[in-house]
Length: 178
Image (cartoon, rainbow, N blue to C red; front, top):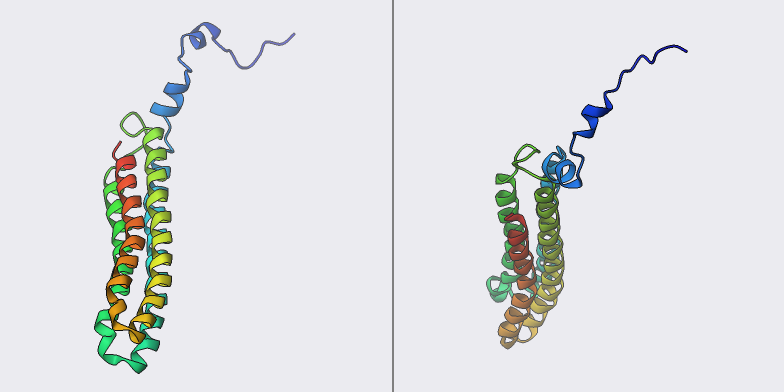
């Protein structure tokens, strides 16, 4: 029988700590990847929601302005509110990216997962808010051209749509603060 070319010291291996906490929470080098995904998700989805809300409301404003050009400045509010949704994503992305660090004991995999989940929460809430602002904004400005007293009702509807993005940002900041 030939001797093995690999000599393994089983006594030395028995002293190593292979607990799940050590391997996953402290030494995972891929933790920052998930934190970076959170930054990306926060920006991409809120920007997509904001773009949709701006485009949808903008088409309503354009069609409304033909008949009532005097109401264009009042009707611009849904576009402004859609833009604010992207700012929520930007705030979360900047804060989370400021907390990114090389993987290891300073930046655990749990931090990366938490920041990824926070970015998704902010991004998807912003996407939904942007869609809601776009649809409600388009219908609202068209109704505003028919009946100017509808302005306050349109603003209230838009505020309820906008606050969905704000809730996402708040939850994301809490989750990313680990």
